Length: 247
Image (cartoon, rainbow, N blue to C red; front, side):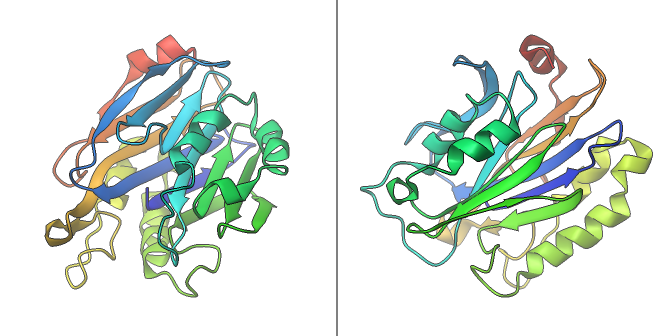
C-alpha cells in the first residue's frame, strides 16, 4: 500500500479517521475485507499471493496499516510485510503494539512503514531493513507513503493529499464521503504522483481503497471500501462487517 492518511483527534467524537489506497501489481491476487479469526477477531483484506494483509481493524478498535519503504528491492528470502500487519492485529491496543514492536527483529522483513492507532494513541514504526525507528504521533493529520520518514526528501503526493484533506474538513461535517475525492487525485504527467495511480504499462496501479471513521460512541463508526480504483469504483459502506466485529 502506498498512500496512507490518518487523522488522530483523541478528544473528539471521531478520534480516528483513515484513508488508504493500495497500489500494487495489477495481477497480484487479493480478496476484499472479511472477518478473520485470531487472538482478537479482526477485519481485513488478504493478499492471496504471500498471505497477510496491508491493513486491518480489530475488535478492540486497533487500526494497523503498512506501506513499503522506497529505495531497496525486496528480498524474497525475508518474510512478507503483510504477515507483520496480520500479527500486529493480535495486540489489544496501539500502545501495547508499540511496546511489542520495540523488540521486533526488523531484519526478518523488507523495509516498511507501519502506522497503528486506536481511540487513545497513534504511533509509527519504520525500518530500512536493518535499523528500527519508532515515534508516538501527536494529534493531527499524518500522511505516509513509500517515500516517507526521509526515504525521499520531498514527497509531492503528501502535500497534495494534505491540501485536499484540509478542504474536506471531515471532522466539522462528520461526512466521511468527502474523503472519496481526496483518494481520487490524479497526476496526468507522471500517472503515479497522485493518490490514485494508473500505470497499466507497468502492470501497476491503485487496486483498492479504504475510508474509516472510528467513533467514540458505539455503532457510530463507519468502514467504506472500494474494490478497484476509487475513481472508477465508489466507496461502499460495510456496516454489517463492523457490527459483526462489535465496533
